[in-house]
Length: 62
Image (tube, rainbow, N blue to C red; front, side):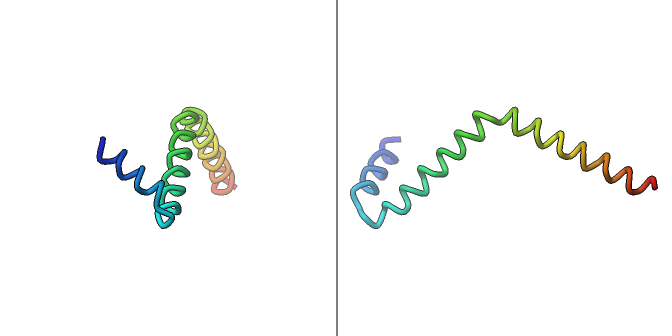
């Protein structure tokens, strides 16, 4: 864990590492958002697949 902290500090001070650090921070925020809203995302996807399934049944039954 200390190695990661040292690496992050080095990246923070290097200009070349800023792009990498920005990407890491963006990914961390996205992962946190997904973990925070995972139940709502799961419900939304389940509802969308149910709607798609119902619509496809309507098409094939006609």
